[in-house]
Length: 414
Image (tube, rainbow, N blue to C red; front, side, top):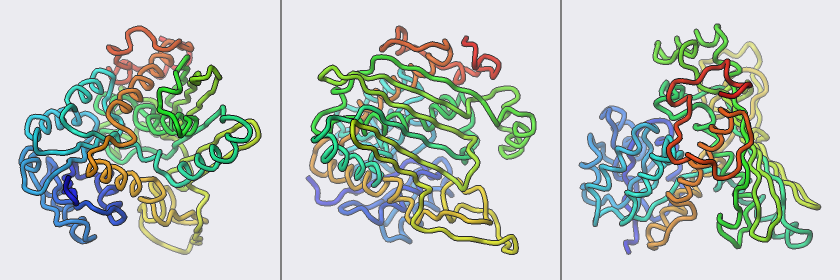
C-alpha cells in the first residue's frame, strides 16, 4: 500500500471546512482536491487547505474529474444529504481500480432505501461512515475508564444518554424535510443514537453484541413553527423555507431498548433539538452502571471569556459552533476539530485506508443507523413503541420527507 494518501473532498460547505481544518492533526495524508458545484467555493476551500499546509489542493468542477486526477486515492463525501447518492454513483463509475477508499458524512442516506444503495455501490472500495461523536475525546476516554475500571469490577453499564442541541442549521437545505430527509431527528439523532449505542457496547465485541428490541420516539416543532419564528426563518432563507406550510421537527426524543449477547436489558436515550437557546452547540453524554457514572458536556469549557454590553462586535462563530451571543460570559471551545472528534476520526480512517483494513465504522454501520432513524420516525408517526424490526422499514419514507408532516399530528399519531 501507499505510504501517503491523497484525498479529494466532494463538497465545499461547512463540514468540508471542518475536515480540512482537522487535517492539521492528520498524518500520512494530504488534501489534494476539492470539488463543488460552485467552483468559487471549491477554490476557497482548496485555498484553505493550502494555507494550512495540509496539501496542495486544487479545485475541480466535477467528481469524475477529481476522481481521475493523479494522486487522488480516496474520497470524502461531504455534500448535502440529497446529493450523496448521486456522488457515490459517480465515484463508483469512475473510480473502480483507482480509488482505495470512500468516506461519507452522516447520515448515509435519507432513508433505508438510499442507505442500502450506498452499501450496494461500495464493493471494491474500503469505506468509512464518518461519525465524529465516536471519536470525541470525552466519549473515548470516558468509555475506556468506565469499561476498564467500573465494568470489570461491578458489571457492564446499562443506561446511556446522549444529546445534541443548538439553535438551528446553517443552510436552507438542512431545514427542508424533502432535501435533508427529515428535521432534527435525521440531522442530529444519527449522532446521539450511535454515540449512546457505542458507549454501551463492550469494547471487546462488535455492534452485533447489542440487539435492538423496541424503539420509541416523540417529535415536535416547538419553536420554528410559531408565526414569528416561521417568518424569521423565511427571511433567513430568503423564502426558501416556510415552516408555516412545510414544517420539519425541531425537537426529537428517542429511546431504544437493547438486549446484550448474554441476555441483559440495556437502554439508550437520545435528545436532539434545533430550539436550544444557549451559547452555541451543546453535546452531552451520560452513562450509568451498577456502581459508577460518567458525564460530559462540550460547553463545560476549559476557557471562558466575558464581554460587557459596552463591547461592540459583529456576529460570528469564533467562540463556539452555532454561537448565539457576543456578550456576557461565553464558553470558548479552544479546538473544535479535536473536541468534536474530527481529528481522531480522520486520522483513524486514513490509517485504515493505508493499511487496507476496514475502519471502525463502515457503510454497513451507517445503514444500521438509518434503519434505527426510520424506525424512530415510524414510532413517532404511529405514536407507539415498536418491536424491532418493524414491518415495512426498508420502504418507509417519513412524513416530514414527503412534506406530509403537520405539527397538529405530533401528539396524537397519524
